[in-house]
Image 1: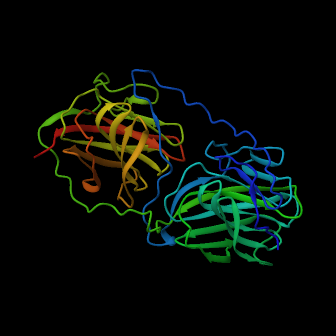
Image 2: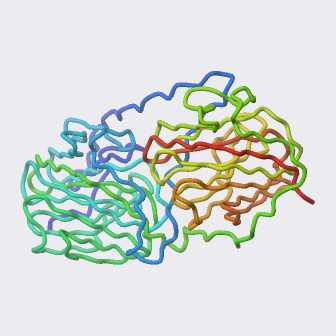
Image 3: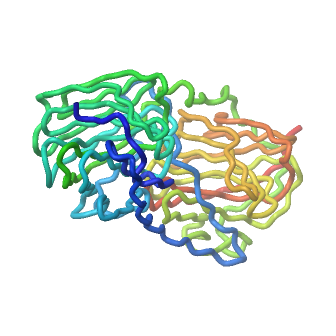
Length: 443
């Protein structure tokens, strides 16, 4: 029996980089988590960019054969998306184009996770090689992580040992263990872990080695994990980490609203083709007019949003339209229109991303609040026509003339409008906007 069921938390951190002791119930003092870079404020004349939410899901896909890549990292560039705190007993560092993880003590697990949630079923692939220590050790991936005490893990070891388990309130619970699986080697191994519905499946080097079910499985954060048994001093290096969205978690996938076509508005209240660089829009770092007659928002920070306003005032009940072109960046992006803008802490935004995720959000003093989400919104790879209707407590988002999402909110009033863009796990993201119009909402 390689795993000991009784465990306690060793690193009691909110961070996802944690270690659990499998035998001795004496906590080890936690290391200090590395601080993230400080995000400098913008000039006071411009609205502050606001940190974006966790990574949104990809479209609802019918099968794994059409899975969507949500995130990938070859670890060639160190990223603050990973929790990388280390101590004397645990090593987590980017080294030589890989993610190095190490454990000195025996009978321990340690893992590191990405700092964003995924809201759908996933398939995770990663390469791993043991660079030090006994073959009687294991490595793998985690999925469905709600916090550092509650997650699922699918692991394998160079000696042919395979385990699927979960931590529930910090307690290790075995789901399935197998021995002498021939697909594993004491060298580089390629893992593919599928967390779908209530089923967990592990493939090693192209061969399925284990599958199990657990009805408590649900989407969450993901990451990688290693473990020691009777011998410590183990190091593993991970590379080519990829997350694919399967879009098949019924409880978390919200279908798009019934489609309707955009019929436009009435009286023209405001328009801008951005040919005049003095038309009044915000101009600050990475946001402003371009030389080719468009308005640019460039995002260089992960999980970030920025926006610009023309400093106008409109009554309740407007429709707005714009052409948005993603000039550079991963498909996991977001771009759209702001309405009902009062100040940087009080406005609504309606966005869509190239990957087909759409959302209606409200910013308040409490931050970014998602009012409604939708998946599987048809988009174009480059230029998309975004239209919104804001009035009479109704917010509707249209993408390329077809309704993508709608909701209601009693706090919606008149105010300024604006343009907004955001990044998720991969940067830079650059969006150019053109042909912006605001019309009175037709009665």
